[in-house]
Length: 420
Image (cartoon, rainbow, N blue to C red; front, side, top):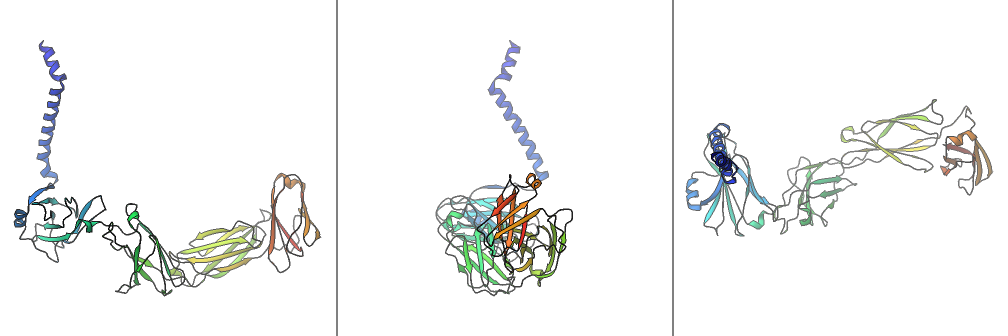
């Protein structure tokens, strides 16, 4: 029976729970003993009496070297918090925050705050007063004060993303807002100044929530831009964004230094093209955009970005056009154009794989070696009139080694280039 009683004691949930409480209590006592070793203070919060708390901190004053820039704000319908900046002197600082509202007979206090922000809870629609006291071992106690209404705390942050571009004499500003703010913002403001200036130009207000264009700017000047939402019931606070530096427009165009064509003997019908250039104001340029396409208009048109003023390309024997533009983070320069002429076989050393029979000025038949059918099924043929740009026709052929093309433009057929 005694053994059974002992067994029941350990299996009874009531005694097991009591044992758990005892274990937690002992563990809690151990924490209390060890807290002084790892931390000087413990943050605490609760109600207070306005008269008593005011007397406790009446020796603390507002000082230019003390705690400052106290600001309280929040997200509409979500939370509120206060932030501040520490004083310039003293060490081992801690902070006390007191919130008071006139319709409440008590206040709320948070002691021993070691950071520079604290979430607050507002209990009515009446105005509030927040005081933050900085307590330091080496200096006198200082304080900062914030006063406002709950409605005035709703803040919408500066835009999450900003895209700036410079059309000639203008500045295009596109923004994207934080997800929690976007539904409350219908307009925004932009202010700007010349880099190095102390005064801002009059701000420009957008008509749309995501874009605005500034006009009559000097294209050669560097500007600084800030952005904020336009205040509303849901965005009573709209702080200015950080500074965005807008470089001057890139008005000059790149200058081509040299170009070179080399036949690739290992690959029939291919050549290596290399070109180098420079930009007159290199320090304003972040890189270059190179666009290349066939003069005949045959797609595709290819673009590539490079940070170096040179590029090498493997091309067919067709004629090409190549454009080079310099760019920075807000603008592109005008383009310099280079014509890559059609390859000329001056030695008449072609491999004779292509034969052409001209029927009239708008029709011809091409034929090629039958063994090429096993390797190629897609073809592009170019033709041109003397002194004019080329024309092209693409076609699919997997059974015959010849093709008749008719109803063509381009006048007299004097040259043909076929790309397999």
